[in-house]
Amino acid sequence: MILPVFAFLIALAIGIVAALVGLGGGFLYVPTLTLIFGLDQRMAVGTSLAVTVCASAAAAFCCARQKKILYTAAGCLIIPGMIGAALGAALTAYIDTRILVILFVLVLFLISVQMLRPACRLVGIVSRGPVLENHINGPGGENSSVSIPYAHLILWGTAGGLVSGTTGISGGVLFVPALVVAGIPVHYAVATSLFAIVLTSLAGAGTQAALGNVSLPFLAAYGTGAAIGAYAGASIAPKIRADRIQAFFGAMLLVIAVLMILHGIF
Image (cartoon, rainbow, N blue to C red):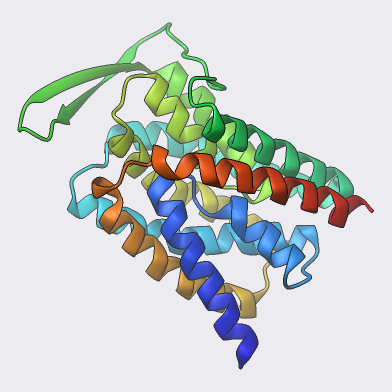
């Protein structure tokens, strides 16, 4: 009885944090599943993707009530993201576990750099081709418009899906910075990312489930805790400056990355 409750509480805390920064929770679901509960990397990746579906759906529902989701932009991320996630998940069947650990740790390092040094942009803008007009309602009721090239959304949607399917980290790690660098306000970027993560993670989780890489007991405990935590996090997100927690979690992710390398390779 202690184990499911412990797993629930861990996922609850991760869900809150994930919703605040819009990255999904895979960057913490995977290492806690492997380092604390002893799941192998493939099982942790598949379970993380399934849990991310639960958490992101809860957070996205809250964001929809706040009218922060840019649905057309999300759709442009989702379609290529689902293809990338399914492909990435299928590739894990042919990649050595140690390589999966290295890929995960590399993405973890990139996330930590982004959190510790926000000025260091890891995502560039694709500025050519037809553009999508996004209408933003400001906090004072003012309206603004942001133009994003479709090619930009398609490129980073595909990349986010591949990262999601192969590592178990949600595509939000690329979706959020891709939207922000294109001029979308951060709270709209987080909300749009969370909505896009639901279906991209579902594509990866479905493929992983077909490969037998989803633990149902941990999905139940983590999924319930993560969904509750994500809804709570999304509810308070507009009142909190995300950059206040970025430095702390950036440093923490560096420590987790080192632990993952030591655990997975040696």
